[in-house]
Image (cartoon, rainbow over all chains, first blue to last red; front, side, top):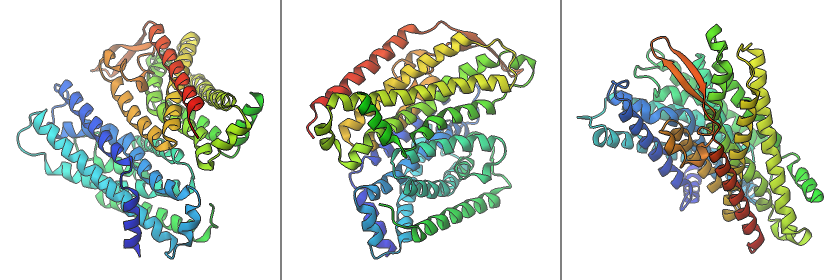
Length: 244
Length: 250
């Protein structure tokens, strides 16, 4: 059942303009990151690590939440159009399966984005920054951790896009969530807000590991947020009346 | 016109646009407040620091907020497939004028709230620097001008595609470009309209002592030329949006 729903969601993405956003945003981020790194070589002395911070700082603080919000809002917008909501609620699948299928597709897009960001980092490091060899394995771990942290953001944005029947508002809320995450992380409450988790996982504003010694707590926070948001979505989808 | 505007107010009822108008100044105020000045020397330079950083915060927040306002204004007609019906009930001119005036009013409210929050922040955090009324008014005019220009560009995209997706995507990419242009040489920022908040700003870093982590801000000349160009762009985009409404087959 879930597999069929995922297939249906994948079809909705065919020839979607969302792919343009997926391509352009990481390219700009990488272009600026490399430029900034090359302009500040006397301050940024940690090689691959410094390039990583320049490539991912704004991306993980502000633009990743907005990007994931756009992915999520696009998938739900189709259901909010016309009588589609009635149609999906009357489909012979549990409503929560629809949410899970959308989550799967958003996570798939998120994976592609993260891999694309990492590839651009690799190419820019070798070609423009002129680094010999390969980036340290830690940066690959940062990217994967960012992906785990991003799961909560994806789930929360899907929930918001499901509840708010507007494409634009959840995207805006995603940006505000990212800003709030940045401020809360600076105060030391990083694990208490889902938007901080991706930022912490990516380790985008320091060369030393921000999660050193706190990795189990980080994974626990990711799991708890995902569970809470998933349960909320399930409760809302199964107990609330259909709103078309 | 009054009737058409009243209709827009009725459409906005329960659309909760007011929350967007409140959320942006609130987010900017909280963000600004998080960098609270400490010590006598920072308090003596606090308004300058605030007015230096506000254009950067606006670059992050405003393009997306403008896309949200523009898309919600037109999306209500797209979702309801009401355009054809509306054109039989009112003139195209009155529909467009009402939407433009309503949007411009929402933006004005947003800018005024942001200015009020700035003044309030200075009062609450006991800034000792003299209140820069003229500079604050200039910031308000510049923010309003850039916001209007971005709003009409997003409205134009909404009219062309009848889908909020392109407008939002352009706003996200524009925000990223605008933010990056703020940290690039000044010349680059003139080519990125989403980031015009920064080159229009009237403060700059005058002294930066890296060893003592102290920054002193100084005034620059008001950038009337760029402000005029921004207004011209806003007028052109307004005209383009009006032409599209006037000629579009529904």
